Length: 283
Image (cartoon, rainbow, N blue to C red):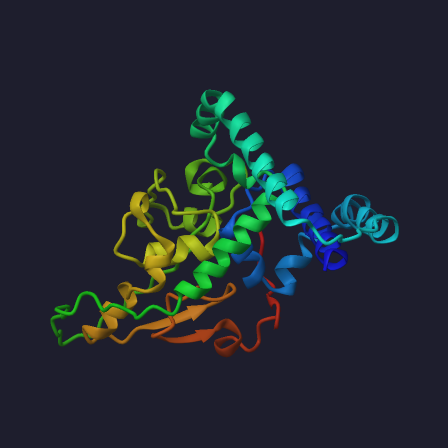
């Protein structure tokens, strides 16, 4: 078993360490979720020659050396000796923690995210959290906003929401970014109202998008709860509105599961699209 698990852990640790050290990424369950939900088009932009070189040097070669050089002999342990070794090891660990408890607790209180930078414990922690989230996903779905209704009007009204849930404010042209990244919005002049002080629930679509349509404030948002609770679109649909979700970027992350929805390939067949996504205009 160790000949499979240790090399696999070395390879995974190498890949994660590249993200942590070269791209300042905090690897947690949310990041693992992004990896699981990504497609080849998105992943290919990240799998650069530098990444593959890093993976070979820090992952593949150590894993290969381990398989060739390390031989473990599992002797039948004596019961008393085996138990004594475990107790002695745990006692030593506890003693070290107690001797430096003040330093440890102060450090981790002021650097709560540091555990997401430690390889491979961040991988193991993210995997356990993801496994729990998968198990937790089978809870029943509570219904909210049961009294929602809307007033009928003689003239039909159409509301279009264009959602860009993880745009960086510092790179937003309307906020004064040195390179104009929102030229069409700027051209609309006073018809556009810009709110520069807005914060997302996360830097990943899988977190920020469900948060936008939930009834929870950002400071108290819980991703697991959002997965098991109806959102804004469910309430609008129950109230009698005709709701349609049109997606052009890797799925709605559960927001439109109970709503009529269509992919960009379905409603713009002349666009340059494939299974990995569509070619978009970049400014």
